Image (tube, rainbow, N blue to C red):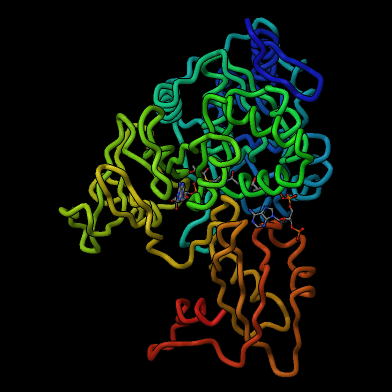
Amino acid sequence: MGIALVEGVARYSYAALDSRIEALARGLLVEKDDLDRERVAVLMPAGRNYVTALHGIWRAGGIAVPLNVGATAPEFEYYLGKAGVTRVIASRQQLIATDPVCRRLGMEALEVNDLLGAGRRQQPLPTVERSRPAMIVFTSGTTSKPKGAVITHKAIHTQVTTLIKAWRWTRKDSIPLFLPLHHLHGLINVLSCALWCGATVHAFPKLDVARLCEQAGSGAFSVFMAVPTVYVKLMEHIESLAAQQRKAVCREFGRMRLNVSGSAACPVRVFERWKQLTGQALLERYGATETGMTISNPYDGERRAGFVGQVLPGVEAQLFDDNHRPVRNDATPGEIRIRSGGVFQGYWDDERANRASFHDGWFRTGDIAVVEDGYYRILGRSSIDIIKSGGYKLSALEIEGVLLDHEAIRETAVIGLPDATWGEIVAAAVTLKHGASLDLAGLKEWCAGRISGYKVPRRLKVMRDLPRNAMGKVVKTALRDLL
Ligand code: MCA
Ligand code: AMP
């Protein structure tokens, strides 16, 4: 069997990985027949241990809860509590960082190595039906706190097999993995598709543009997937290279069979510049945590800049108006709603959100689009309270909720502002309490340890009053124009 994972100088075969996964599953089970929906958190960067933990939990019948390695202690505590996690499998570094929270919650925190020898060798592993939940993936939305999307084995199976077919994955492929593994882009589109078909994954603990270009330049990869921000960062780096090196990197990106962009809108200028540099027409696709990938530009055929493509096989997509009526004319903007075998089961322990997110069996994405010759073009979102920064979906309400704890802040409104690198950046408008003062550096410092770095405001506007309408509601569109 081939090489499943490359991590630094180490190479791990599928066979070796498989026996490790079984050992971990047995270590989790000990005397039990089946973890039976026990929620086990996974907190580590990409690599052999991540795959061992994720698949070990699945094989033992548990529900994996992949968490952000950059989460702060309060965020971590929220995720663990909300999903009812009972055990955490973490890397050494994460274990140290999260130990106080785990202790406080009376939760067992383990390293992969603690579990590998803990089970009985002969212990049978349970048969896990595809209808059972496989994981809970947290995603931000229009509510203040992130919601846990419950994704079944069947949905994962549908998502993975759909993409393998659409994008022609084979065991000969090799792909770098540097995106975070608590979101589907890294977890499903890169890791799971590659492992499903016997390809090779080159795991990076985080984005390292220089190393990535070096390896890409030596022809290590056949497929590349990233968010638009990564392409912007790659182009900045490539343009800074000496002519010969630059040529080699561009040539090898051009030789790959596929470069994909997604998770946020790919600006037309990024599409065009990438094509100029490498000769590759980026394949832009569209999806969401709750649905997996649903719309994609074609593998063969025209890839249109500024469009997310056509509905993938097996997926039903329909635009709806504000009154839940299907939009008859494709040129009229409507909300994209999805039905497919890849759609999640619902939000964990959140009936209100479930009622709001589905209508007549359709999942409401909140994204507004039009269709031109079968190609979808995203126009924006139905809620101004959702911000996409570097591919991460952020809730303005969640950030506002945290900022209001600041002793100087009386009121706040958070919005996303357009940005060439990040797509959008987080901006906060505030009014201050009598006699108080606040600057951006002070606010950033205060936020550290309270919210993940990518949620921290990059702009601050101190105002006498926030713009409000006659009902007293903050008018965020006016604020955006003001900022
Ligand atoms: C890092 N920083 C950010 C972001 N990332 N600020 C705003 N937005 C961000 N996304 C800040 C850090 O807090 C830090 O700030 C500084 O930038 C450098 O951090 P570093 O970690 O070194 O940055 P990086 O390594 O260059 O990270 C950029 C990144 C990362 C690789 C683009 O943001 C990323 O992995 N994004 C992808 C997220 C993703 O996979 N989303 C998919 C979800 P300071 O210097 O002040 O401390 S959507 C999804 O899964 C659906 C299904 C779909 O369609 O794909
Ligand atoms: P998440 O909840 O983090 O999975 O983010 C899903 C959201 O990302 C979608 O609802 C869209 O708003 C956005 N998204 C994903 N891919 C694209 C794309 N290619 N163009 C524009 N928006 C996208």
